Amino acid sequence: MIRRREFIAGLGSAAAWPLAVRAQQRQPAKPVIGYIGSLGDNPGSLPRFFRQGLSETGYIEGQNAEIEYRWVEGRNDRLPALVRDLVDRRVSVIVTLLSTAAALAAKAATQTIPIVFRIGGDPVAAGLVASLNRPGGNITGVTTLGQELGPKRLELLRQLLPTGAAVVLLVNPTNPNAVIETKQIQTAADFLGVRLLILYASNPSDIEAAFASISRQDIGGFLTTADPFFGQQRGQFVAFVARQAIPAIYQLRRVAQAGGLMSYGVASGSLNDAYRLAGVYTGRILKGESPADLPVQRSTRTELVINLKTAEALGLTIPETLLATADEVIQ
Image (cartoon, rainbow, N blue to C red; front, side):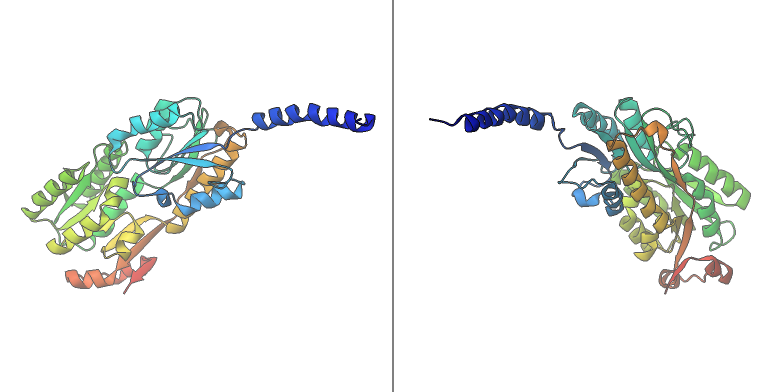
């Protein structure tokens, strides 16, 4: 015969069991972050500094958070479908560290799912947020300098060119910032007395066509508007201008380190910190904070890198005044 005390204890356990099951069933699933990136190779393309910021808020991919990856691969026309897919999957937050175009596509797709961006440029002028301090709506993020630096790149390049030399500006017409940046660079060219030849490219075949056009003309210098797609083609650009012996300036420090003549853009430390802050914001939103209450963070630090080895190969002498202002000189 079962003792009365054991029987009562057994009843207690039986009663507690369905409660425990129901509590377990109510436990929320891992939050899912929808990430829109530029490269289509693997999840390692997600900047490690973003992961660092995410971990600072207690979230680690594969442990207590998941990430759904979508890759643009240089084709902005794919953005609406990629974002819509993430919205349909009801991700917890959409993260785009890619471009203004990606952030705008995300904003157009949802007014309820939180969005965290990292862009180069003015998010207010782009229509992403109402103000930096009070973003409003479901979107916030981090901004670094972007199209504002185009005129300065032209000014730096001009110091290495003979008077009257023509400069090619390669523009991606699918980038929302392209119109503003092109106008700014054209204004700077008029002021500096530089003859500017504007060519357009939004895919690899367009780039080849632009190269063919440049090869048929007497071109003194080369630069592009700030664009993630052009960043992916950096090796192609460096090889081409080397063959043509054309001085060029780029947006990214790593291009100068890889053989480009010069780069002028956001300081690498600032860019890394921007990715980290985007990760922190993502984690804070997953914990329940509203994007509308998270001010847009802004970084304005820049850096100039000059590759003297490339300059020597081009037969260029870099002015001492320019070398003195460089943050890094590659021998």
